[in-house]
Image (cartoon, rainbow, N blue to C red; front, side, top):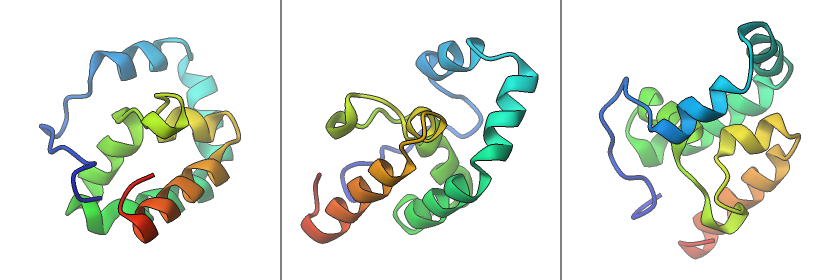
Amino acid sequence: MPGHTPKRREGRLPDRFAEHVATFDSSEMERAVHEHRDEIDAIIERVRPWCDSVSRAQVWFQSEPLAALGQRTAFSLVLEGRANDVLAYLDAIEVNGYA
């Protein structure tokens, strides 16, 4: 996503992600990720070319607020059952260069 994916140091996520994760216990998080694995994988694969690596795509997925989707991360939206909204957002960026 040209201009939409700042490079971050891998392995260090912003505090807002840590706060979001802190609301889940580990079993809830594992269950949620397992339940949405196909959607997560599809989104990560979709943004991987724009992020230059899978690890950077994962950081984007977990930590980058999406202004067009209420400043929520793709991760939080997927956990809320809104993966289609994230995919539509990515479609808009791919076609228009912005969402």
